[in-house]
Length: 259
Image 1 (spheres, helix red, strand yellow):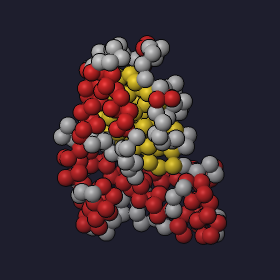
Image 2 (cartoon, rainbow, N blue to C red; image 1 turned 60 degrees about the vertical axis):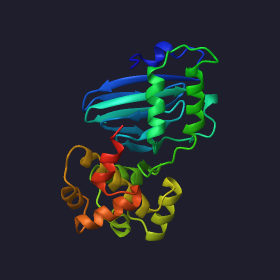
Image 3 (cartoon, rainbow, N blue to C red; image 1 turned 120 degrees about the horizontal axis):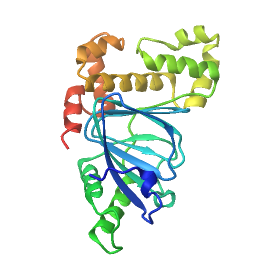
């Protein structure tokens, strides 16, 4: 696994540079940005990325895309083994224009693992060059997952969103928020969707999903997570989780950490 900082090798004339690093639980990376786009994956731990515009949570076995020039900070939940692909801006057409958490099938994770172990400088017609081209082809088809939490620019609403994201509850309603913000329901609904791209119910569910995954990865039981998020019973929480991710909580996390 290549363990160097991207700034040391960013000048190399390569469309993709692959780097692997390990971080202890609780490690925090201060706000920074990269000239290249960054596609990351992790075989262990949870990565929480934040920008002025929102937050994203990447469980193990998933991926995250960070566009070039995006100022962001990163927090590790549990020990993290991270693999990063740094992609030249003109070498990533079709990738999202904003940060996104991505589904990362085993095939793509295997390609990234191979890229990190490949020679840093390789011949144009080599196996490594073909590997990088295949990665470029495959990464544009990665599905976006509901593990992002956009924050509005409206100051009071953004503050309320950040407060909620720290202790989300599925039981909170639009009327609860309208009362606290002194807004009519109609004004709140229009403003919220205009500034986040989501309905309040969609945004609330994503906040709950992000919190749930973080807790589950650190060993909190499904029953406890369901109760903390305000669900009437574990079955209701499991149904919501399965609808979002295609599998119940524990089966999903086990599946995503096999590679």
